[in-house]
Length: 573
DNA sequence: GCCGTTTTCGGCCCGACTGTTTTCAGTCG
Image 1 (spheres, rainbow, N blue to C red):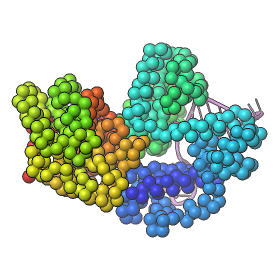
Image 2: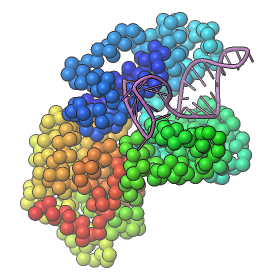
Image 3: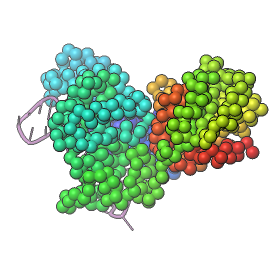
Image 4: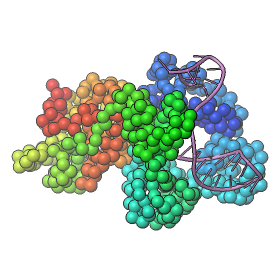
């Protein structure tokens, strides 16, 4: 996909323009375009000019630049800019607390061109004494470089959310907290997050702040004010806390939940109606009369919009839909009636089928599918045909004993590097459900990898493609595939795509899920459980599904057992 | 640079905290 490349260039242009001190709105236009290109599920390279212009934030000029890049591999104006602003200077902007004005100043006065030079001169205390810079600013820059070096990359949702919940619980117990809520990308359940935002109401903000900056986990206090404080935890995650008045809680929640792009659009809509939105409420412009803000719903209602669930607030069309009362009725955890990707101790899981059944029953499920690995995956003790048939026999027997609960006999069949399935059709035909996935040859060419998935989908017995892009957040990039083509074949063959709920996978991601849904492709949301506690990862899968605008009807494991079996058989016919 | 049931030109979201100042600029979210 060219999308990331083009988005990166537009962001870089925005950085360079910032350092030059250009019109801030022009800079924002580049950033907005970059954001919308990155979030676009279709390959930009395949769009017609008309389709390009339909992307919000892309006008004539930026469409020209995109076409120029696709044609020549370069953008002339970008190359010009790079000549004007020394290479490396833009990277200074990635240092927290250092913005374009300071970057420009540092270059003009000290000829600093990159972070290494900055670090050296800051260490020698050469920064202090420049206009507007004294010791404190120098210290902050040094600290910013340290933070940057520690790699404060985005962390997987599944790693940060438990931490955030702990902090919320601690504050509830130890500080005078009335209302408390997570906000930011964590509340939107983005698959990765950079920091934790917490919003609080209290009759004693001062004490809340005091407790907060003395949390057991605090490594560093970045700022402490009357209504806003920030810390860094021992895990190197930044936590921002805001205390607001009860009367403003809803407005503040909306404001701090974001996304920034969503909020900007919301405010633009408000301005057009003669209203003003800030974190304290929604106001009439002419006399500043407060119309609402205690509840988050106020903001949307007064603008004549449906309430937009946090997971949708990304400026991906949700405000237009809210205006037309056309928001999806999002899937919920309680809609899920079973898990269709579960491993036992026959391959690399930790539990017996019986143990898994009782755990599933506890969670209110009506069925699960046992899908151990196939023989090709030796490392996971993949099953050969003989062991698979033994497992099937055991499951058949168990099914006869179970009351009100069903086991589906399945397999997670390995898609071999040449595109063949690890079992013959004859064996696959004996399964209730076949989940196919790639576990090897991640570095094959895009064509090869695409071909492997296509060959799996064209197999009449393959019901689901599991973790379709193979990513492990923060550890392994998705392998390269032609997603447009994959989606087309999924639709044609009636193959479902999995949203793997394992927190490091979350694969398909939200963007692809939304596109796939629009094409009418069906999904399963599965946990890939190897350990009983992992059944609870379903919650993460649901969150990604919500972010992909999925409704109950889009997801096969919301069906009752009989309906599900009917759907699974349909592809084979 | 984008965008238009106010506009093809003139707008473009809004406020807190910090560090530097002595009323404010820069940065951030």
